[in-house]
Length: 207
Length: 203
Image (cartoon, rainbow over all chains, first blue to last red; front, top):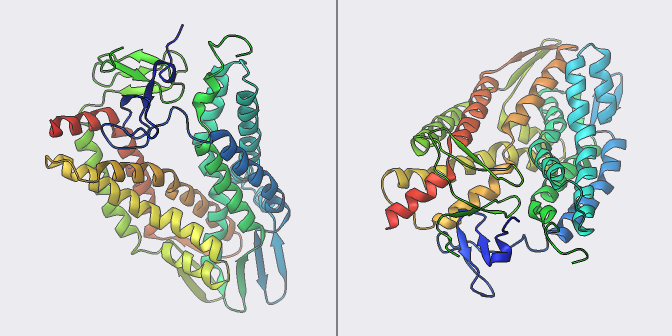
């Protein structure tokens, strides 16, 4: 059976990866770099749920409200994330349409769903393939940041298209919600402690 | 139990014996497959070199325009900081703040903090607030998103070519170089060698 650091009274430092002996102190600190030591991230499940639920709620206005409003002398138009993807698709930029669709719509939704799954399975002390759950966590960790791409598309358009009365582009109300979703899902990912996935293994049943 | 030849996996907490690695060799957690450590020869020097190069390129990127647009006889240029200003002026301070933090503030902090820990170590002494600096670096690191900003700029360039004449500015290429150099620095960094060097200098 695998030996687990926490069960042997050893605490791994998150900063410098030194293994410290717990010594039963109330607030142990790393002998090498002084970081606070804890066997698992404190309040990980609660914090992750809080960020995740907020993200899931804001995901709705982020997709329904326009993220970009463009106007000229004669017409004005507002675009949601999805209609922006349609514009790219219609004008023949299929690859970019696919990238924006994946980064802005699929990844945030997939991130929310997979973190919820990781939380529920950790709380239920599930033993279902921890290896796959570890892979899911790593994927959400690496891919999450790319969701911010639509914010930057909007930002660079706004900076460039300010031609007074002729044409101008401003962000729409959805942009703030969308930015919040990306930030909140990243905070949720960082709050989750992947070691929780493995903690129900090697325990007596019902333990 | 002796702890000096043991390592714990940061992703699953499994204890395992530390192994010696050949140059460029990699140790992987036997339980969850996470990378435990890797032997990267010359890691500290190479990381420092990439960080210094990235800092130079990043400063340069902020002095050149990002993109240029021409329509109906009107011309407009944008810069990275100008993007933040434009967002603020159109009444979106939160989005302006998000762009400011992820593309300017955090990259500056990444470079500054990395230099503050790596340079003294190279010169043979351990910086006083090393623990604090390292934790600050770990905290800010995921929020630097220059490479995502670049992808966003490319998408908006493509969108604008349908309605106006647009061209790329020097800053776009320099930010591209910056993103490559920063990921090269991450790839070159060997945290185990870094902390071993700290132990060595303190001994």
